[in-house]
Image (cartoon, rainbow, N blue to C red):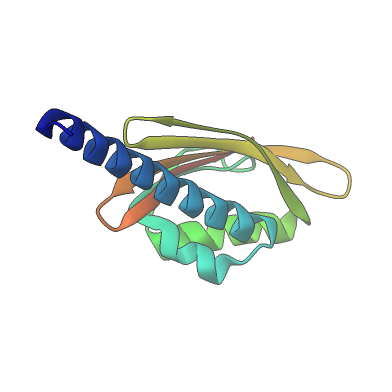
Length: 129
């Protein structure tokens, strides 16, 4: 096998392995939202997170603990019982994830912007509408 083929094979393996790792992390985030497991979700927040939640007028930049509490408060106030992921799209080192938060009578749209870092995927933006 020529050296060029070996290099291409190694590069393709590394790219495939990286995308599988990102996919596993998005599934963990999805599962944490579905089960409202905010203690595990806390691990995925970036150092600063842009939050836009339905009842709040202004977009707000929050620290991880505060962002986690705001989302948990929204879940409690609106009696969110589940999450259905609609789509996930990766562009470069950014992952967009959308879905529906399910309440007894209403559904809310959730959009997450995730950024790949050295320590894995981090939630950098949350929008609930």
